[in-house]
Length: 291
Length: 198
Image (tube, rainbow over all chains, first blue to last red; front, side):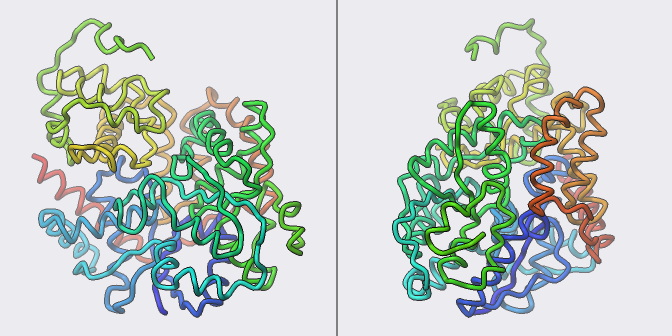
């Protein structure tokens, strides 16, 4: 299986452990990921407010135009990048007025796009192209008895509702957790917003959202997520939540690919667990993982 | 939240405001709103909003420009898409919020810290084609000035932890090679969008 991979700014920087573990897991599943050449930022949730929806979406389309000739799908692992690339693509395909605007704009920078690329979220590719049975068959270190909260976050499942999962109570991540031998706990807020980029301008908003989410994870010993921003907010700011609310959360928050690398028993250097701020060592030690 | 706050101020009716909003990229969708309130109960940040999206839209229609533009409602929106997924009239509420943020930035309603964050983010992006989180943070605090000094200190502990876990790169990423062409595309799109709106 071959795909183009759009990493995005977070996965190139603070979420390096996501990229590292994702690449290792992909190799273990015979998935070839080629980086989109000279990719540019998707604009996150910000650009469209500053320059307008259409110009921001043209930025996203440049990334798709880069690889259209290959006939390969573009896989995205960051929720926000996925939202922007997928929505821009869908609008290009369905809205003739926008298509005309985007075509002229891309041409102003010497590029052309015809709307043929498929933009896909990493969990959907794992669910549909790989399949959970193949994942389960690859597991060499079953995480039996490990209670895991699958935090999907907001944007990936609601970009195009019902595209591949329930937009409010998604199940694909829970199935993946099950395939790794672990147990997905009931988790009502698994697709609730983490507070996103309020962290910098008004951190108390993020702390409040994260407290609700961590509480909702119930008896989970560990949380996994496919989103760089959710991971950062829930992991790096967990101590701030505890400070603000007098709570005592100690829930390691991993990228789901880190947990896959552990369950696949890949080389420990691919886990990237040192990047985790709430230490996952105590929880994973019983499975023979030294962090 | 005070339910009646929407009508407590002195009425300053601006006939052109609703039209101004309808003229934005997603503004005309507001005409479809039937005031059901599903957006309000779906919103992740509803509790801290001055007005729920439903109320905000009613104020837009009534032409209450100052109340709309000075409210925190659209700045609180995190683009979590719940309202957009649920709206029975199919209004892309999130995209309307983006338009309102854009209008606020353009017309100088920039007192909320989120406005400075958005400006900082875009400036960093436009300079390289990719984001450097350290650059966004620095630009943000420069824009906010001394009034955010307490926040810098509050972020210090988390920042140090991120640094020690390798989560905070100190060097910016490489610039996009085609950055000049990328910005030409953006400029062209903005120009065409302006033309289309008028």
